[in-house]
Length: 288
Image (cartoon, rainbow, N blue to C red):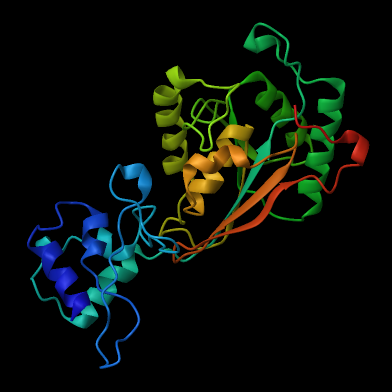
């Protein structure tokens, strides 16, 4: 059986520690006319540098938290019993859903030469108030707010936090604005080739660190807010949905907008809202 073959490969060390290779050994697909399964290879995602999966192929181990990839079979017998294997797999299974709210900072003074002087405009402060009111109106028990360490994100967080008393805040440099990857199609007037290598690695690290299924120890659904920047959010959305990350610049986000990602216990991801500012009056909406 294909499932047993995958276990044997892992036990013999042929998977080489790579969950992607382990899952490429699992045969799945539609039955042939004779009743046999047609193998379909699940290749690793594009950002690994390997071949890209075909259209519509979902990598179930995109966050490297698929239970089968976390079981170390070499510590036990090659042929564990079904009950033992089920128990060990259950130890690594996520049980809760993560709701991730990605908030773009409000409008700021874009012409300031120093980053510390790129503070929110009066309109930006109004936008942050509206976003904070919207989040509070959802009636959710938010677990935490993680925000970029850049001035405009910090000030946006200060205002939103007033509407969510008691929610802890964490600052991080990983969510700072940058150029994640060269966009396709290219943009003639914006070519920061020199920073793709550095910014891209950092923003990818932010994705891997914050966007994944819940830890197996988490018992209740969580609601987390991330206040950062348009480029970071657009890239995260593409990566989370396993869309080509080079398409990030095709998306557009208003200031103070809310993007809602849902990560299920089985690793499946849904986008419930992208750049929502429907809670703002038309004269308060901007994209600068």
